[in-house]
Amino acid sequence: MFIPDYLVNEQFDDRYFDVVNALDEAQQIYFENNNLLDRLKIAVQANTPFRIGETGFGAGRIVVALLEYLNKNGLKKITIEYNSVELFPMTSERMLKILDGFKDRVVGEINALVEAYKSVDITVTGWHKMKVEQSFGTLYLNLWIGEALEMLNSLENPCDVWFLDGHGPKKNPSIWRPELLLEVGKKTKKGGTCSTFTVAGVVKRALIDAGFELVKLPGCGGKNHVLQGVKG
Image 1 (tube, rainbow, N blue to C red):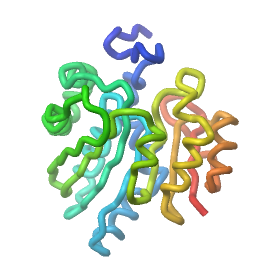
Image 2 (cartoon, rainbow, N blue to C red):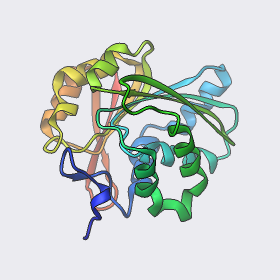
Image 3 (cartoon, rainbow, N blue to C red):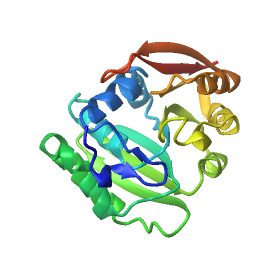
């Protein structure tokens, strides 16, 4: 398959996502496998924000997939705190170009994210706060520009769920190193969850050491299995 240069993260010599199944993959691995809708309903009833953590913002593909997923499921009055990290942030122009392949499906969600992202000065490290209003409610997007362990150390509140991304262990081993995943465990609520596309042994061992009970679930787009974990 031909992959355009702009879809490749030159830092890791790897594409940002599968150009065919990227949105469906995110919605299965990260949302459905984590029972997101039922958990969000509970958060709405309790009038509490639902906190998400992500290791690897990239072009915001998972955020766009989440906006679509919630908009089409009819939930209302949701408040989400979405905490992500990016060591090599891109310009809003490149983000729009990368996400352009999905515009026929999620043009409104793409435009909402890119418009919010335009306020970010990508030359400044640390937290950058954005607000995205949608029909389901409000997503407060907190993006840490810098190293992932620094982001985790500065995160004040534990998350309900973690979306573990950021290229595979062979391409980007630092995002899967044990000390980082141990901190993910510390910054996860008891009974909270995580999920990831990789089933590499080094990742499984690190997540178990971080306090997660793991199960393999069906993959997406030709991948046989993915991981989901529950924090004990």
